[in-house]
Amino acid sequence: MTSSSSRPASTASGSGTGYRHELYPYRGRDEFVEGTMGFIREALDEGEAVVVAVPHDKASLLRAEIPDDGAVRYVDTTPTAHHPGRLIGAWQEWIEEYVSQGRPVRGIGESPWEEARSQAEVEELRYHEWLLNKAFAHSPAWWLLCPYDTAGERATLESMTRCHPEIRADGRTTSCPDYSPHAAFDFAALTGPCDPYEEFSYVPGSLPALREKITACAERLGLSGRRLRELHLAATEVATNSIRHGGGEGVLRTWSEERRLICEFRDAGYIEDPLAGRSRPTGTQLGGRGLWLVHQLCDLVEIRSTPQTGTTIRLHTELPG
Image 1: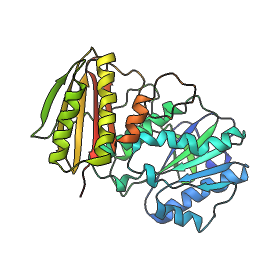
Image 2 (image 1 turned 90 degrees about the vertical axis):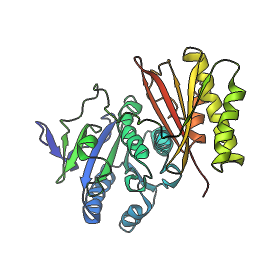
Image 3 (image 1 turned 180 degrees about the vertical axis):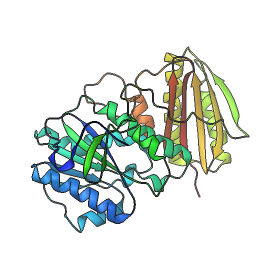
């Protein structure tokens, strides 16, 4: 990978330059520590704060060099590790304190690729990396470094370079030629449902029957209690949106896959904003809370929407045992 513009990473500052999103491919723990520690020390030299959101074992390596203090903050990513749809909202919260103080801030965020329990999680993590550029395009200036272990191979390096405007190698930051902010993201299309699956068409007035269908499927798989009630709430929200904004009707499909109950909703509507549901709604915001709630209630949410094909939303709920 080459670029006509390159600069030593140590001369670049996150202060006043807008949002920067940089990929750091590495192999092994030594390279991880070398690259991320260099990034942290650059920030401290520039008087900037750093939020480090990486898996627990990686955080331990960095804490041994630089402990938590007012300038470097380590956050526990465990609650969001398997919920890619919640990560943008989490980053907004993690950096809010520094941004509100007008203090330049950097972040180190490594997606939990090795913890992903299914290909669907891998694809949503990759989609999240691309959506970060849209989410923070007009935010106060900050700089996010994304370490990526090339030994893991859960997502290809080529697919990661498409998500990041910049890349770091050998202590230098260069523009990433594979990235285009205006290109449509080529994340994987959803696979077909697993057989056997059940199908139910819903229209206004049929939401009670829809919930009964979900209950019957869930109880056969051992899902009940609080988790079933949460799934009912999420499913009602999605189906209601189908009826209101998707042509007045939709189709529900249910099946089990990789120890999860999956409820898929299809309709003719189009969700124009790919960030819908990924940011915590403000206290004065009108609308936009429904999909955010769905992301909080389900173990994974997949949304695919185009003007040509309409909208497909899949809700994943882990099964007991």
